[in-house]
Image (cartoon, rainbow, N blue to C red; front, side, top):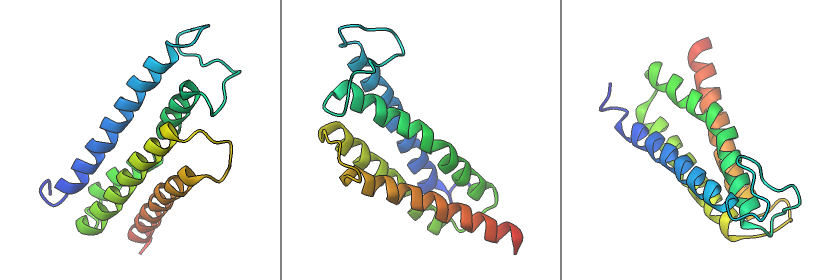
Length: 139
């Protein structure tokens, strides 16, 4: 089973690496605040601040990894189609990397923004995985 899901495991690993990198960047950026309080971002900051953007990108990843990671692991445990699953995981991971890069580099209050597109891709992948699991369980 391990070999069949190798690409999926690499994708999950790459996602976890991204979140650790986001945490490091967010922590480093927050320490540049004039009124630095560990674990707290100044509420006066907005999208024009990298401190704000790095914090939000990290928190958004934390919010979204739970359903994705749950779906990925359940799919593996249910021995669902490893090729389909690996494709979905790679799409999700690429979307999250692009989302983060855009969030870091584009300061905008516009919503939806370009980063919304890549958030949506990841969110849709998670929904597809959950639907696949439901079909598998209830058929």
